[in-house]
View 1: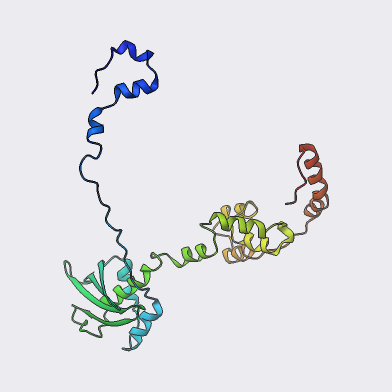
View 2 (view 1 turned 90 degrees about the vertical axis):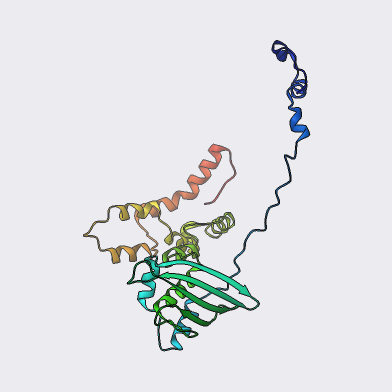
Length: 258
């Protein structure tokens, strides 16, 4: 470090002089602090999409179906891990599944897929899992897990809400809906979008529902748009344009339409 002035002189120095005076010279000599870290390429798991229909077709070939027991075991976290390796047009899956009836017993399940996600062959270490056409509950559990990888194991409810843009919405989608719903009650699209969301008009009915509430009837009323024509609403609509123009003049803004 360069020779410093007395501390009482620091207050009289300009910012550039202070930076020069207090600069750690060792940092300048060792600015790289060794070799530069090279970031490794991010791992990308290129796995074909496996659909429930493809799993059903494989099971049907051997007169079987995806048993509820396999789905229940998957939900109960009997599946320990899944690994994969790809070679040319084939993808090889290795799953480790805990035995249902025995503690500390894990079966290895091997599955071969093609690039389209079609099941080619399977085998399992359990007594009923002889390959290459194994279709035991452990194979079924791994196949069921593969169908979940494409959507992050989301529930049907979550996927439906996402498809209608309710739980998450982008800025572009927001602007598009805003344009399409101009006119509110006179716009059919506004009514359709309104049915997809909880708003002040129906929030109280949901919160005050009790065991005595007819929930099917309540759900039906919430999913069917009705153009209400009460005397109060008719009165408001008659004077809406007048009130809007008066507000525009009072606030010295351009006339607007909701």
